[in-house]
Amino acid sequence: MDGPLAGVRVVELAGIGPGPFAAMLLGDLGADVVRVDRPGGPVLGVDPAYDVTNRNKRSVVVDLKAPGGAEAVLTLAERADILLEGYRPGVAERLGVGPDACLARNPRLVYGRMTGWGQDGPLAHTAGHDIGYIAVTGALALTGPADGPPYAPANLLGDYAGGSLYLVIGVLAALQHARTTGTGQVVDAAIVDGTAHLTAMLHGMMAAGGWRDRRAANLLDGGTPFYGTYETADGGHMAVGALEPRFYAEFTRLLGLGETAGARDDPARWGELRAAVAERFRQRTRAEWTEVFAGSDACVAPVLSLGEAPGHPHLAARGTFTDHAGLRQPAPAPRFSATPGAVRRPPARPGADTAEVARDWDVPALDPQRPPQQKGPHDAA
Image (cartoon, rainbow, N blue to C red; front, side):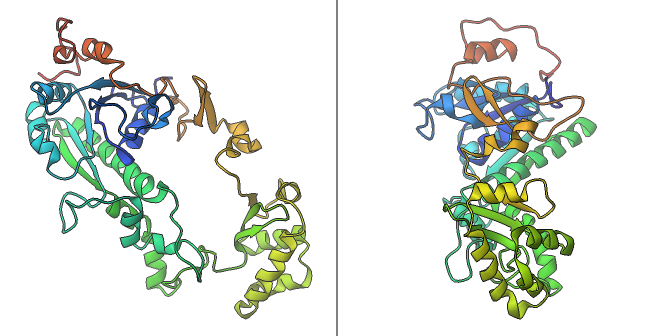
């Protein structure tokens, strides 16, 4: 149950959003993640006991602005394989824990930097959030109806998809290089870069004339009546993705659409088709339509809320969500046949693991009462 990254040591300099999520993912995969929290309580003001993105970690509190603070982090960096930080460009350097200082102590270290705008460029030093990052990449303009404003998809698209996942891919690739060559490096993971990268297929389709550069006018953005969402009699919604002809045929059969189904191949009649589909869905509740389409190849699913999702029969059967220490949460993903990940520890409470980390990583500066141990195989020479 240790996961494929068992034995990999990670230092996370506490922040918010994509950095903690990336460190959680590494922890889910078995890495030993030590989160360096700052004095003064949780960054977001959320009870740490419920902050799922800090599961599978241990926490120490270090004041980087106090004497000895930077030295404590540098000592952790000596013993780490990966360090993650999410400050604005130049802040880590001013605190004495920038990449030059860390790599001088540990040349094999992978130093991961998580920002919205990146380490350089005209906006590098300005503040921002997910919605702004995805706005300038064109990704936000893909959401919402043609006659309305774009919808912000929480912070999933920018912070986590374009940010955290690209940071994890980057540091793991750099870790492979470090283990092969003995040389660490800096990974500059910018949300704008990752989110832009996610749109690669759409840029190709647009260049080929298969994607219009406007909202709700295309195959995958609600522009067609057979790929979108429809309201049910009880105010719920069903998601329809009947793209292929044989799936569409199954969809229209179960929906009871009748002769209007033939409008699929005539874009001039899509307005008529959309209205007919909407009218049919309004005749039954979400639960009733879910039963109608259950087990079929019609590519129709109920739109569930966050609270409802864990109860979906398929997700329940797969254990997509799990309960740990009384907290329901998504289970680690993806899955491994030989080295499965697991939720091993509840969300870390700031500073709760200081003595334990000082002992295991042999960092007396964290716990002056504990004498140093003999260095282990992870420690710098």
